[in-house]
Structure formats: structure tokens, C-alpha cells
Image (cartoon, rainbow, N blue to C red; front, top):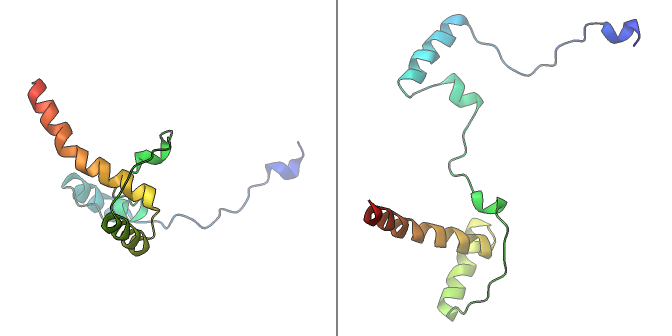
Length: 106
């Protein structure tokens, strides 16, 4: 290692700073569930898509022409693949069923 490696390098511009008062105000807002600074810096995704991490298997099923047309329109409108839309619809439709099953077990 040479002495030039030990030189202090300039800090890359990245995080905009904020004052101590802003930090305290935001901590109070955060405690009330309404952060301003934190939420601006770290936007949380609205919905986490866990299905992309799961292993996928091919499935064959039959749809009516009306369902195919509706799926094509939905895919074009959202820009998402049809298979992803089907997975989302299945998960959305199965949520009430899962809740009812859990209620019966208790």
C-alpha cells in the first residue's frame, strides 16, 4: 500500500443534509406515523411481489374467448405479462378463502 492510497478522498455528493431541528421534528412526526424526511428518502414499495422469487411451474388451462380478450386488454393496459396478472388474480381471490380457513381453525 502506498501513501497515496491513504489520502482522504472527496466525499461524493449523495445524501442531502438536514438540520437538527428538522431531524427532531421528523422524529416526532415519525412517532405519529407521518414522517416527512424518512419517507421521502426511503419510499417503501406499495406491494411486495413475492411470487417472482418462487419457483414457477408450467400450467395448462382453458379460458373462454371472452376471458382471453379481457386478459389481453388488461395486459396491454397495465403493461404486465398475462401470466403475472393471472398469478396476482389468483392470490387476490384466495385471500378471503385463507382468512375463512384460519377462522375455522381457531
